[in-house]
Structure formats: C-alpha cells, structure tokens
Length: 468
Image 1 (tube, rainbow, N blue to C red):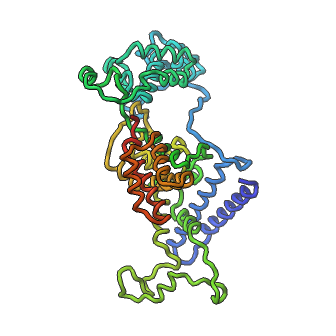
Image 2 (cartoon, rainbow, N blue to C red):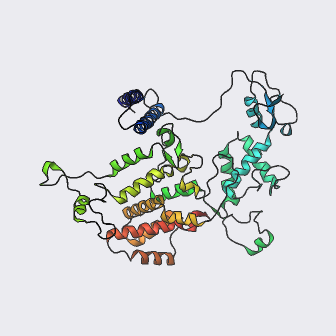
Image 3 (cartoon, helix red, strand yellow):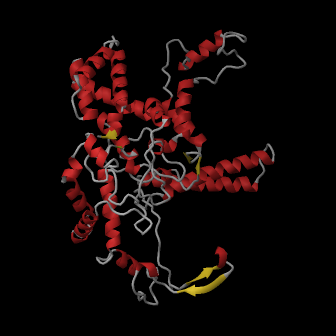
C-alpha cells in the first residue's frame, strides 16, 4: 500500500472509533436492539480495518506471519501433572532426552532449555535413524512404496525393510551429502528401478504378487497438489510466482466461519458491485436514468401469472440477476476453496477443517498431524468433482482456448490435446472418436465448448490422474 492508503486506513480507524464511542454515549432511535446492531456493525468494520493495517509494515509492505517458539528468560524443569491436572503437580523431571533413544544421559546447561542440544543430537551423524526414516519417505514418494512399508513405525513392531542394504546405502549417502534431499532424489530418479514401467508379467507375479522386489513400477494416483497443478499447467494458467501474504491475514484477525473469512455480507456487497454491469444511458430518458429490462418486465407482469413471474408486490429488487447472485453466493461461501487462484497448490491457504475442495477430495493429508503415508481412495466424489467443479471447468476452457490459438484444424487440435494431457499422441481409434465428437459442433461457439468438453474428459481420465 502507498503512504496515502496507509494514512487513509488510519483515518478510517479513527473515525470508526469515534463513531463507536458516540454510539456508547447516546441511545439512537429504535431502542436497545437497534443500538446493539449498530455497535456490532461498527465493531466488525473496525476489526477488519485493524486487521488490514496490522498486516503491513510502516512502508505499506505486506507482513508474513508464522507460528514459532521462543526461549523463556530462565529455563526450568517441569513437574509431572497427576492425571494431567494443572493443580496437582508431582515431582519435577530434569531436562534430557528419552532414555530409550540414547545410550547415556546428555548434559544440559542450567541456563539452557535443551532445545538446541536436542536439535544437534537429532541432526548428528551418529543418529542414523533420522537418515533412514527420511530416505525411506523420499523413496516412497518417488517409487510408490517405502523400503519399510510401515512408514511411521521403524521399531520392532513395524515391518522389516524389503531391501535393508539399499536403505543403509541411501541413509549413508544422505549423511555424506550434507543431508541434501536433492542428492538423494537425483540418485533415485537416475536408477533403473525408478524408470521401469508397470508392465504385468505372470511369472513374476506368481513369485512376488506384492511387488516387494520391484520387478515392475507401482501404479499410483497423483497427489492432490500435483493433480491441481497439472491441470493449471495443461491450461497454461499456472502462475509460478509466490502470492504475497495469507488470505486469512488479509481479511484481518477474524475467525473462520464455515469456510468464510471476514464478513460475508461485506464481501457479497463488494462482489455484486464489481460484477454488476454499469448501465448505459439511453436516449429519451429523463435525466439520463436508464430503464432496466428487469423493471420493464416487472411492469408487464401481473400477480397469478406463470411460474416464476412476479408482479408489483413480489418482484425482485431492481437489477437483480439470479445467475450473478448464485456466483456471488458460491464465491462467498467457498472462499477458502480458491477456485479462481492459479498459483501453485503449495501456497493455498490451509485452515483446520477448512481445506480447499481441490485438495480434500483427493485425500489431502491432515494438516494438524505428521502423516508418513497418505490414503489413496477412488470415490464417486472425485468423479463428481472432475465433472462439476468450477475450477475444473475453468481450466478445461482455458486449455481449449490455448489449443485453438495454436492450431487451425481438428487433427492438430486433437494431437495437441493428447500431447498436453498424456505426453503422447492419440491412437487411431482415439483420434477417430474425438474428431467424430467434435464434428457434432457446427458454429464457432459450439466448437469451443466441444473442445473444452474433450479437455475436461482428458482431465477426468485415469491415464491423467495416475502415474503409469
């Protein structure tokens, strides 16, 4: 924000504070109920203005906030709480590491909390457990199954590694590279195991039905974030720049209510004002006042007419557009879904129990817990999402427009669509059926809709959603 914008915000805050103080001193007409409504409205507006001002520094640049911990002035040992009750402390426990994880006790200075010592111990070259767990998760992400399939249990009750020598080799290479994740990824993706396909072999399946020995690649579905980013990349809409600030912080320090951030009524009014077309002044209208079509139609309608007709008493407000109202209502109630956002999924706002629909429907991990292995389901909700969700429809249309701008004939359009979605050319049957489908659309507008339907069907296909 500019200096003028910052000063304007401060001025609005001062005005709201003065207005609130005036409401508290006087009793407006209408009684206590009206006074309470005005106070709540003023408090809500003041909260939003304060939140906007608190999210920028003195130069008007957005601030980024994150949760963190800070050392206390004087660290001390904490007592055991009997049955977790804070008013029933027992003996104090000295600072240290779990005895089952270290051979001998660790020395912690009296003026230290022990966090730094614990971090150094976890990242020590002698702690090979951390290296094994990390490379196992990297292997699982790239190959499909972990060397130790019980991702969160490396103890005696967990599964034994299928290739213990490979696990040790990767762990040692990870430590020797300075704990470089990129180095481990480079070694795995350059291996034959990563590059083999999913071709089925009856004799191998008879000997190893679970594919524990990796005689073929494991077919797996794309993660939720990768699936959304892939649709954006295919449509040419993917924005690689990081967005500034958080959507929650931009709305001010307010609670998230039912997927909405901030005041839904204020957001609705702003969206309606932005989406409503400005009326053009017609000839012969006194004072230049436009005659809206809705108003003209209402004058002709009488009560008791056909279904949906509205007379003088029941007519809608002037300029009312049901489709626009539906769009505004969806944007307000699905604000955290970020259906219009085109940046990478890693930057989407994640609020507890309010994950974006594009991630939640495809088994997004619980953001409040550490998850070693996500679930991978195949449900009807996923198919309905690919069929009806506005984000998918928008990207299908954008991909169709991208293809129309690059190609002139249907054969080239079909080839480009398959190359973008599948990284391969269509087969003879696929090309024939797709061109036959596109031939059903005659004029230019129908042709764009037909090509968008083809792009959407490619997004919804198993070949697009699965790594083969």
